[in-house]
Amino acid sequence: MKKPAVLFSLLLSASGFAQDAVTTDAPAVAAAEAASAPAAPATSTISRLRLFGQNGATAFLYRDSSCIRGMFSDGVEKASGGMSSAFGSLIGTVSNTSLGIAETETSQNLSRKDGFFSKAYFREYEVPADKPSSLRLGFQDVSSFYVANGLRYDSVSPSCHGDITFTPRAGEDYEAAFSWEGKRCSISINQVIAKDGKTELVPVPVTRAPSC
Image (tube, rainbow, N blue to C red; front, top):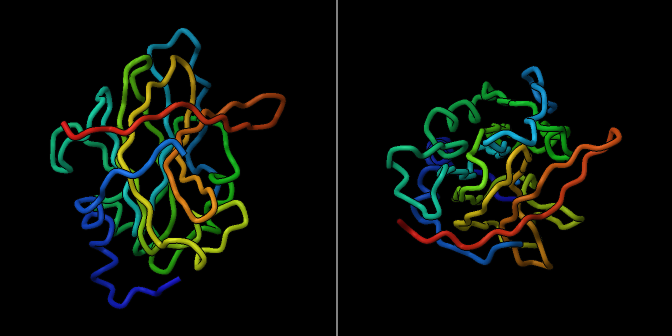
């Protein structure tokens, strides 16, 4: 993994990278510090989504939208890539935001994913059920946080990004991730299912999100 040349580039990597992001193929990203809330009831009109972030990564959420607007548009949730999160990740003060989604292997081992001046964290959001929501996700030159399944970070492309949309179902929980087939990276959304003390991740359908 390449080390950052200058500190200033770390602060701007997430926001600058988002402006250059292009769509790629999709479908195939520390324990929670906040108190867990009860699971959303099946009759709810909302779903919940967990996004991960750190310096060098982008995670923009567009609720109730099947397309991607500009990064400075109204209604864009910057889970990773905004200046405040970039600075908090840089100095290690950023914290997780939990709505009670069950822990997964990634969220439980989050502290092991920290990079150089790049603390990893997650944020959970409520999204409208049975309506499309879109995401712009990506990473570039960060830690092995985004490389899994036995792959070495130095053996694959140091970047991956894309724009996707999916339709969550009422009362369900989801987690965004990057998936790998050989050296090829794509973006996926997994449903988080907690049962009998275990958590299972099940991929759900996603499609490319066009620009609005």
